[in-house]
Length: 251
Image (cartoon, rainbow, N blue to C red; front, side, top):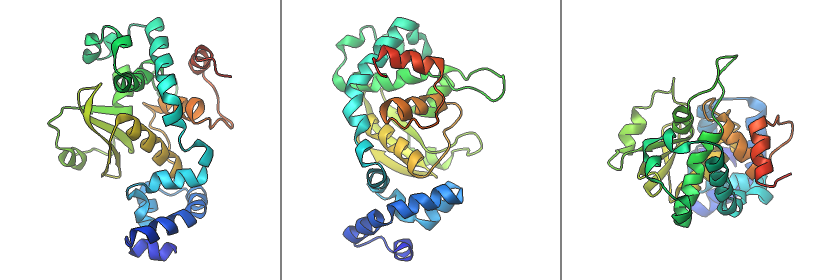
């Protein structure tokens, strides 16, 4: 089946069926081989077809497949409330200055704001004792906010891989109501209908392909990994993560 998947992309139903049947073997190979993303996608080119990353994740971790969709509507409110209580988050980005009352936002706007608050709470740590990244650096690593007029293909073509690790999320337009969201993996553009969908897809891509988190946004992804998806084995909980978990009334 692996050979067939390397050389065929249709019929679609057969591709999906073969991908489902090989999900566990593929994940074991990825974990064991310790190869780069480029080699993974050379061996399994269908992995970036629409729905395949989500399909692999659901096959591997069925009880966690919808975790973000189920929990984030509640969690985002707690994240925003905690951030409001603990710091001047509006100074982190110019657009935040116009958000006077988060309680008046729509459900989707509040959901999106919650994602932007995570880099405020969980800034990435630099190597050794060089301190932490700025909130702006952490946010850009997690969600790169671009103007509405962005040509996404030109943007991807000009990525400097030496400074911009993939995958990551990109949005075009207003931070609270972007007109389009994407996940970028190996210069491939994966459109997502909402920011929630993009964050979910990006996390699953990181997990399915066993990719290390970018240092700038590592703490943000760790929050999602531990608190939302509840992958906790062997993980060290930072004081900030413990504090946020306690505020959210989580064990």
